[in-house]
Image (cartoon, rainbow, N blue to C red; front, side, top):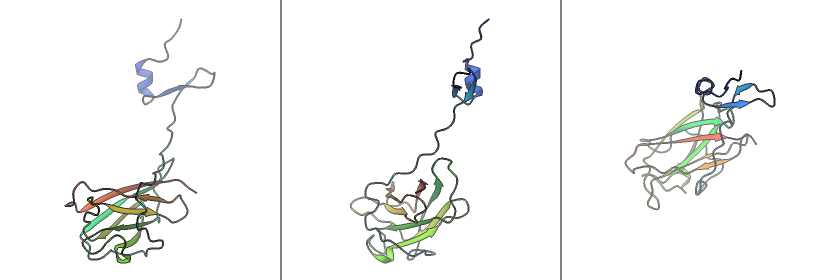
Length: 162
């Protein structure tokens, strides 16, 4: 008597993915490939200033830049990671030293920094963020806002160890 091992029920019970173990005929759930690292975005490093200071706030504030930092592969949150932020704002251009600042992630890998309102540069309202601390590969991001009226922007990093 033969049994159909690949019924809809067995596949669903395994979370939708099954693999036949090497030559043994045993069914085991497929393992996740892991969380892929974030790639640097084109234009992300424009006007980057190495060593921008860690600050409580950039300028007068009113706009929030936030996000998360996780490790590639297992997605574990990374605490104490330095994220540099800069942008063209109501108080200065993205090339101005006073438009740059850095912050650290908390125990959950979350960062948040208040800064002046971002305004369009070259027709697009956008921010710049960098992970550049050295424990992981450097990543530059340049997220574009949906509207120049938005008062916050999120960016998420998944970092690969060096």
